[in-house]
Length: 183
Image (cartoon, rainbow, N blue to C red; front, side, top):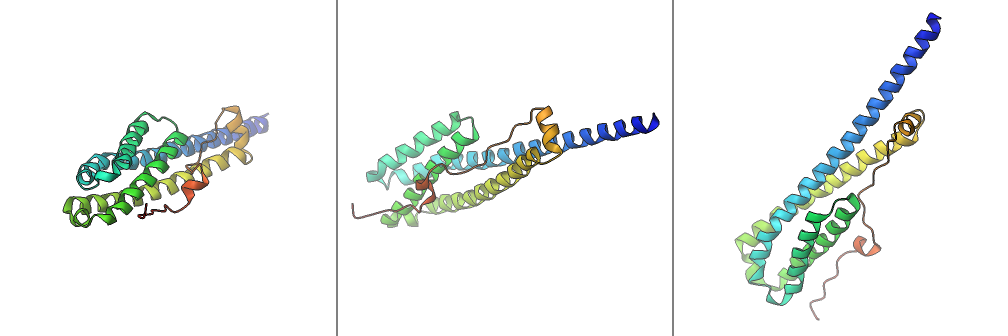
């Protein structure tokens, strides 16, 4: 009887340990998503300053500036990882276009505010890239725990769900941005 009780106690402790590991992994995924969210918000906070700096110089590229403003509004209303990833990809493309088009405006390139904003955006993009990688790594570890034995049994008992990876949705987003100044 004591042996059976000891075996049951060990099994309960194993289940508790696996459950706690799954909870910790899920919290790490949520935390890593929050880090992406913070960096994306930082980038979106920089955008109004960038737009104000660029506006006076880039009169012919108003559609790009309007697109960035629209994306900023849409991002604030997005709720899922997939929605924010899609908007992030679109915004990255628009910002690349602004930076590429700025090459046509020597006065803009020499503007201290623009140079500062460009550097801030570059630093933020680096942080976003690192945060995405960290999120995908933690999400992959969590999702793997949901699939391997014996934690998959505990995960299904307690209805743990896999998380989405942060990824690009289209082949177009994976390509380099092509800017043609001859049009």
